[in-house]
Length: 173
Image 1 (cartoon, rainbow, N blue to C red):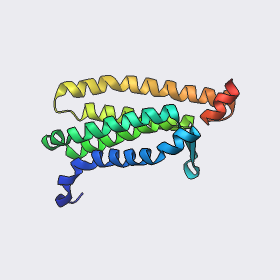
Image 2: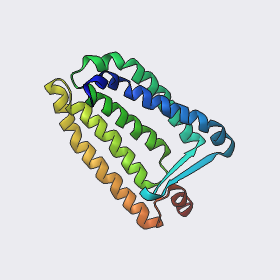
Image 3: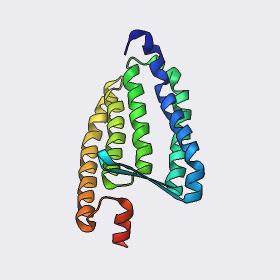
C-alpha cells in the first residue's frame, strides 16, 4: 500500500461492513417475500443460501460489525500493526457473514477456517507474550475442530451424495 494511502486503511473494515449492509438492505424485500434466495458461484462450485433466519443473523452481524469497525478506528490508529489489525477484522467479518449464508458444506468449512484464522492471527500478533501464548494454546483447538468438521462434512457427503445443504436436508429427512 502506498504511504500516502496508509492513513485510510483504518476505514477498510467500516467500508466493507457498510457495503454489505447496503447489499443486505437491497435484498430485504426479496428475502422477506420469497423466503429463500439461492446463489451459485459456478467456477468455485459454491452455493450461497439466504433464508429469513440466516438473513436475520447476517443483518445482526453486519450491524454489529458496522458499530465495532467504526468505534475501533481510534484503536486501529494506536496500534503498530494497523494493516494486520484491519485485514484481520475484515477476514473475521467475511467469515462470520459467510458462515450465516453458506449453502453447502464446503462453504461452511471455508467460513469456519476464515473465522478461526482471524482469531488466531489476532492472538499471535498481540503486543505481549501472554497473547502469543494464548494464540498457540488456541492452535490445537483450531486444528482439532477443523479436522472434526471436515470429517463430518466427508461423512455427510458420503451418506447423502451431495454437499448442498438443501439436498442434504431432503435426503436425511
